[in-house]
Length: 98
Image 1 (cartoon, one colour):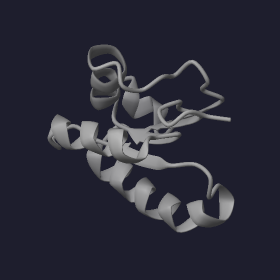
Image 2 (tube, helix red, strand yellow):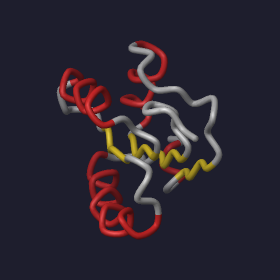
Image 3 (tube, one colour):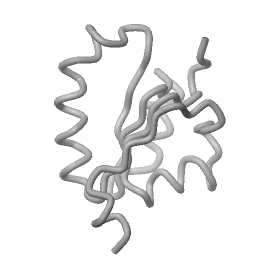
């Protein structure tokens, strides 16, 4: 089983707006598809302290994030673990590479 901060699925989105849109839709399906997993979205522009509190409070097995904020949480703060990552989605990968 997954620990609270073990990320199983990661969806990387190029913009805040797209990450929030994806989160809204995924939230509608999570209770049916994977009720035992927690998901969060993390975007630049939100306070990092707020993100850290959400991770501490409920964990994050499925993450929707923008690249910069994901880097902050994995590399700088070391609060998310990607070692058990099984599913990676690069939404609008061409935009991510710009």
